[in-house]
Length: 103
Image 1: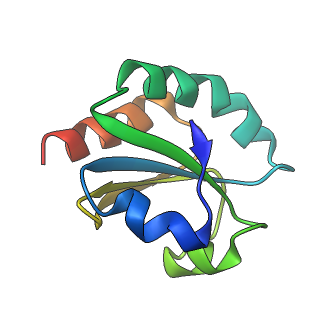
Image 2: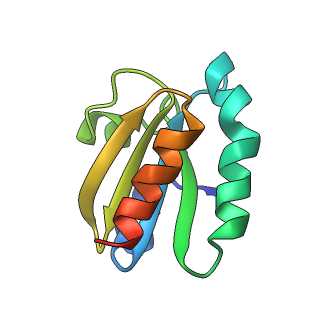
């Protein structure tokens, strides 16, 4: 799983399924859910891009997606938003990814 910056976001998310983890280094729930998100990334390697965006380092991306709390997960398919989940709920995050994969 990798960090995505604003200048590469469009190219990285234009094709296929992406799950973006909007997070912050100071966020306890973000750190707590990180191992689960890494497991999702490992399990879906080759099927979906799972990446992170630090809202403090990339405020324009956070604003573009209306991020008001972290962690927030945004699922995209071919650059279009499929849905979002705010909070560190592994079941809801996995369901969001599956919905994007099956859209």
